[in-house]
Image (tube, rainbow, N blue to C red):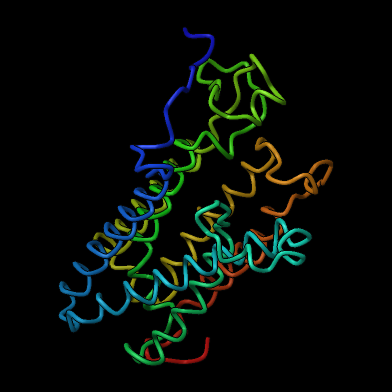
Length: 273
C-alpha cells in the first residue's frame, strides 16, 4: 500500500503570454456543455420545445456563475470585498462558492419556469438534476486540478500531498491530506445516477419535487458531513463548531426534506413554490 499520493499536476493547461488557461475554467465549460446535453435529451424525450434547452443553458450559466461569485464574496470574504467592491468583478482571480451558485440557480429557475415553461420550478429541477450533478462533478475535478479545497491530514493510504499548494506547504508540509475534492466528486456521481434511475426506471418525476428532494439530501447531507474533514476555506472558519459551508447546507437539507414530504400533493403547473 502507498503511504500517500503525491499530487503534482500543473493547474494550467498552457500559457498565452502572461496569461494562463486553467483546467478549472475548462472543466466549468465542459460541465455546462454536459448539463446542456443531458437536459436537452430529456426535454426531447418528453417532446418539449428544443429552444427550452437553449434558453435554459443561458439562464443557468448566468445565474450560476454570478451567484457563485457573489456567494464567495458575501459568505466567505465580505470584509475584503465590502471594502474593495471593484474586486468582485475580477472573477478570473478566483473565488466561487457552490452554495451561492445553488441559491442563485434556484432563483433563476423560478424566473425561467414563470417565463418559459409555465411549470412548477421543481418539475424543472427534477429533470435538471443529472445535468447539475455532471456540472458539479466537473467543478470538483477542477478544484482537484487546482490543488485546493482539500482536507485535514490523514493516515489513510489514499491521502494526497498537494505539493503545488502554498497552503498545504504552510500548514501540512509532508503530511498526506484527505482528497475531499474526490469525495465530493463521488457524491455528485451518486446523486446523478440516483436521479437518472429514479426518472427512467421508477418514473419518480410524476411526484413533482421528489427527485430534487432526494438529490438535495445526497448533495448537501454528504457535504455537511464532509466539512468536518475539510481544511477551513477562510480564516474565520477556524474554531467554528459548524463552519460556513455547513451553515449554508442546512437550509438546502431542510428544503430537500420538505420537497420529499410534499411531493404527492404538488402540481405540475406553475406556482410560486
